[in-house]
Length: 324
Image (cartoon, rainbow, N blue to C red; front, side, top):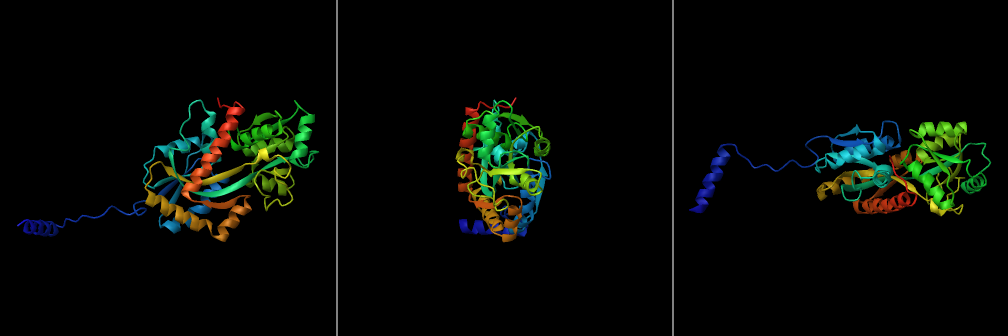
């Protein structure tokens, strides 16, 4: 009797055109929004644009870049924490807002470790220490010796307080035992201008920003901060080669989403990203900017960022740094 009732109910629903469809499979519903926390034209925008089209093709859905600049990338990161974890809102993450900026504020705007889903690293890149071409120092060790002999008269430039350029200068202070004065600027461009003009004596910034200036003869490279020499600057030693391994650092860029993203979506994105980053032409694009395409799995990327957080937050505490 019961089986007859079930059959009649099914027949009635079929006659009425009622079906029980499954939820649409990600990412078929709508385009994916990729938030970039910096203005167009910078290194973060470059990375976003390099992966935008090939990643969209790999997952079968359009990716739209949405610029949300301000506060060193923390505005964009904060916005992501409020997004639905459905895989349709992602962020191009980097060192500043994900390992430095939150620790410089009296009240952290978010927790970089717990409030995001780590999908995959995109690239890593060394920083380059530079000075004027006519400076007497030819490497960072000689520069440190020069700064020690000219104590109280030396400063280093940065692209702004709390940026990776600022923290790399403080890392230099710690590694060398110096206390060189920090001079912040509103971005890398004015910092470079004043360094060329002689108002400052050192800048440690991303290769994508400084290598064109070095190759153009406007600046002199003193060292790279990564574990190996930069192919774009083969004659420039690493800080470790010069006995200043305490200055070692690399910047990262990667893909993150809001906390709580479904693991199947994370895996699809991570696998697609790894496939994209294996392309030699894409790797060449990153290399031309002084970076290295460097895929990491979600777990590896999360562990890398956690380690970076420990490093920079310890330096911030030791140097007693805080943004107003």
